[in-house]
Amino acid sequence: QVQLVESGGGLVQTGGSLRLSCAVHGSISAINRLNWYRQAPGKQREFVALITSGGSTKYADSVKGRFTISRDNTKDTFYLQMNSLKPEDTAVYCCNADVTVVGTRENYWGQGTQVTVSS
Image (tube, rainbow, N blue to C red):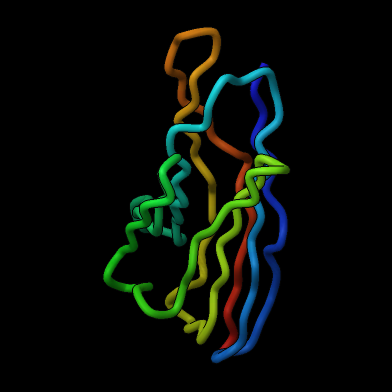
């Protein structure tokens, strides 16, 4: 059983910062890629950032230069550092992991964490 546990959401003022965490638990052989998505009320889920097992990163244009995705390999924990937050960043943020479990690639989602940016 693979489980993704997110934390770090909350309420912050415009221009503030938050750091989200996504801990991957379970018997996995590899974490191939970790994605962050977000979904604002009344809107479709959108891609935010990803990091591959090789350390490559990619960001949505809307967060480029403000958000940084990283990982702690010793803990199988991933982070999304969010700086210069804007009200339009308000959403539920979810992590999504592409993992290998006993030779099979599987995909898992976390439960989500709320980020609210006040103006």
